[in-house]
Length: 266
Image 1 (tube, one colour):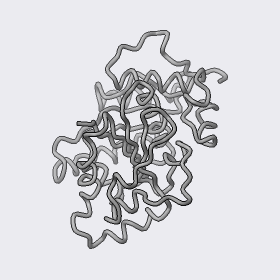
Image 2: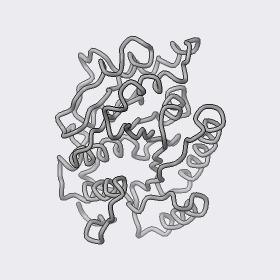
Image 3: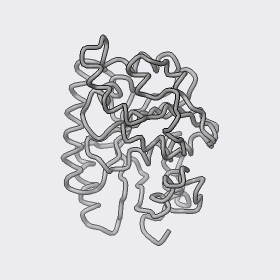
């Protein structure tokens, strides 16, 4: 049965979609079957895999509102091993439609139960808010992967997410836990970065990924080309970092050679 991971943080702009796209692409290249479920109305994961939102016959909007089965909305991408359930802007209105709907908080979980056996990993890209969409993801998933920046306001976002997970755990998903905290846009030269890293380590011991994703121009450029960074520039620091994260996810040792440069040009 596939492992279902919600990639979530109530703070926006922390690299949720970037992480879903690039981690999924690496795992797919290693022979894993990966499904990415985009439940963010912005649809950045959808765009990041080069999927046009025009002319889609079904999307996560249709899946959550009961107009389509998840299998009918799934698109096999051109990238090895990766399929996507795309998002369109209509998804933003789904919460209003679901207000009085039966099992409105379990819609995604029920759909994933019909297909998770077909995949090794399922990544759910969540919107940057505590909404009905995010709650659906947290109820449906096994664990949560939390991307965050090493800055003061990110600590507040992490505290809010932690409180949300406690509530979901008590009421709906008793085994819910954090898979890991991933620092993104990380610069090891900054004192603040290392201070925030140390502070998070105090409250979440053993939960921080060894991999730190650096700021990287190629990583920022790749979505505009509709490609994961490993297909856009495999030698870039961003590609190296997500390859290292992939090793961690697979439980493989990460050697010094594989560790990405946390600052530099590319």
